[in-house]
Amino acid sequence: MNPKRKQRLLIVLFIVAGVGVAVGLTLFALNQNINLFYSPSQIAAGEAPTETRIRAGGMVVDGSVQRANDSLEVGFDITDYEHTVHVRYTGILPDLFREGQGIVAQGELDKSGVLQAVEVLAKHDENYMPPEVAEALEKAGKMPKPTGQEFNK
Image (cartoon, rainbow, N blue to C red):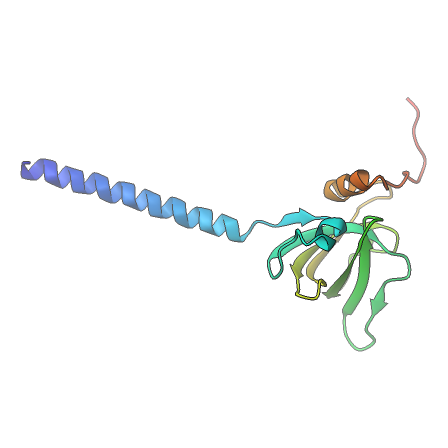
């Protein structure tokens, strides 16, 4: 093989290897940032991984919200009307957060089955429900009826 062809072959091999490394690193980074949604029933069944960031959603159980007197720590339960998961969150909850409403909490499930949330998202109007929560409640056959005025067309 003449030297010019050998040099071109090495350049092509370095480019292919560089692209392969870049694609591998990109896929690794994306894999670390994926937040999969789990319903309380899936968490209770053990389908959700522990110590990995996930999203869990459901309805906030009436009477379950417990606030610490000396910090911003809040504990509450979410349910899909089949199973219940306890959530711990430290921070200011959204203004629209209240009992009996649909929420999505993002965080890590610890070994005791408590979701240590780093973010809590609440619905933005009286009839809206996050799509993942609505789907989980529909599967359980417990989708609540919309409140508020319905418009006839």
